[in-house]
Length: 176
Image (cartoon, rainbow, N blue to C red):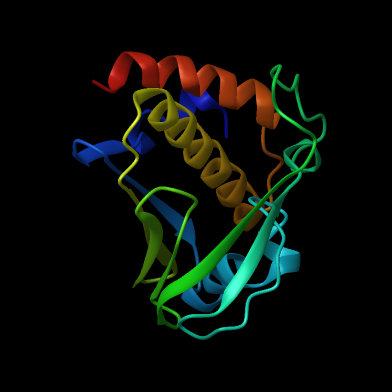
């Protein structure tokens, strides 16, 4: 999937500091849930990190975006080859809903809805106050979800960093 093929998949602000992105993904719902919760699968599209499936459980996410695609594209200046963040599960309703804390924002939630042999994924990232951070977060989630969609479809995603940079520019024109 190329960035140019994703015009209907751009995130929108549903409140001034809340981003929502939706994707229709190949199912079944249990498979998509596994890609959200199992470290070995989640590291293929987002970040590694073992989760204990319980509200209040703390876990660490470890990003290695250079490993998401081959080739990875050109990493922008200022980005390390690995990034870590500790999160806490705040909501859990397998295989339909997962929410956890996200740095100094209001957290992120994933909702899954089975639609025949497909799954509607709705991602909501709350309280992303600074515009620069919203651009990074919007482009990041968009690109990570494009990689997830490719993995679930059995296709090769485009280079991560090249896609992220193009999306960041696009979100700069879309977000207030």
